[in-house]
Length: 587
Image (cartoon, rainbow, N blue to C red; front, side, top):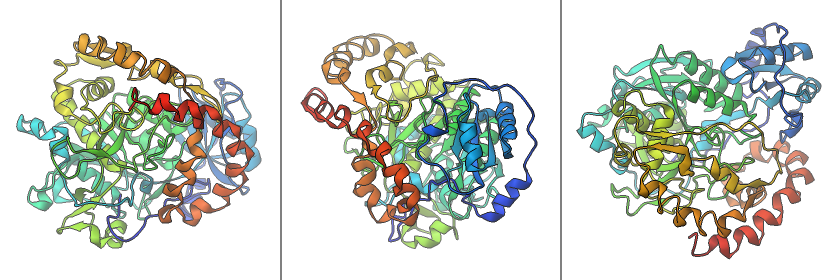
């Protein structure tokens, strides 16, 4: 969340040490279970520990061990037991376990075909919030997205529950009778106490009914129910294993709590391809279980290759942030400079999917929380707060998904995503890697025929992309939501599949012709301004956690990372930055 005040927020380290302190570490080890033998599903031998950018130091560190393609976590459990490690958490939906391993055990497991070993990295909700320059606070996002038109027809999201995987949700009047379930995995013991302040703000954007402000500030779906899945406490920091446990809980309780949408307003730097990333596996499992999953793009824009995980996953709806300028009209919208930009690293998926309001938006304040106490200048009246970030664009999009599910009973996640993308309004810049399919537009989505007539078919890839590999961007286009062949429904007439979409305008010279097909993606943004420039090295990002040896040491700055594979001409040379990309046919 943006402070919208004078204090900077510094993101947590991405090293693999246990971020929650020794007490939590000891509690986890006490939960260790014995492994049983089972066969391991094979993957290419290259899917190994060696493919992750960094390794943790110390004799005992936390890791997530995954066996992609297995039916559950039994294989990972057996592998860790065979290596002599200690399992302290099992997540069947992500085919993974969290375990305490020595560096030697981790290396041995990672060299086993079919096994992926990932450091239990720290994750902070701050990574999808920003201290970007502000403007006058406003709450016009519901008018911008067209949600108010649906409210007028009686659609407020009633009967749809949204799981908010975050820092908890305060039991405020704005949620009266609609906090229908939850769990606290942070160790604080109460899912309805938000001691950090981020989760309450997010929940207010999704489903606040305006009770704290006399109806002045409401969420996108003010009738939707909320499930509080608390994965972080007063620090706003958690780790990969805890987030996986939260997603696993949501999937397990989906039917009991009638969960239709899961919101993830945070992210982590991607360590691997989405094909072998345990966080991506978890959100894909949630999607396939029937829940719409919305994730924040991240706040490392405007540079290419900066989409956070799980927003990098092909299936989920990834939301970037536009600036609505505090007006209900979309004509003056601009892109925020902080919103993360695709292609994703290292896979080259076309993200984000769409954009929604994310600068200086007003939502609910969690009184006495860390954010509230550190940023008194961000308070609006007695019950509200102002913030910026793709966290909040994701929350607004989750509220929109709840409205869609009430309007179209029985709609699948693919139906909802297909409609939201096909019905999006033109974005501020019209670049698939910046504003995706365009701006959130509920009336446009619902105008695409009746019932479940619009469907998007996307499949998850099976072969991981290794770091430093060259990716053909046109090949990513073919399997994405940009390919009209992946859509079906009543809107497949000339406007979509005819000349305007699959004809010369998109598949001709400007898109799939010489200006598009000549490009490859080598992840150059990691060595360019995106990570080494002012956006990352400014005051907000210069804390010790980022500038310590784990980040600036040989693992990141050595030849393997800064070598030619990232800075080569294919991405940073004339082929990408030359006239064919920046010329009139594109811009």
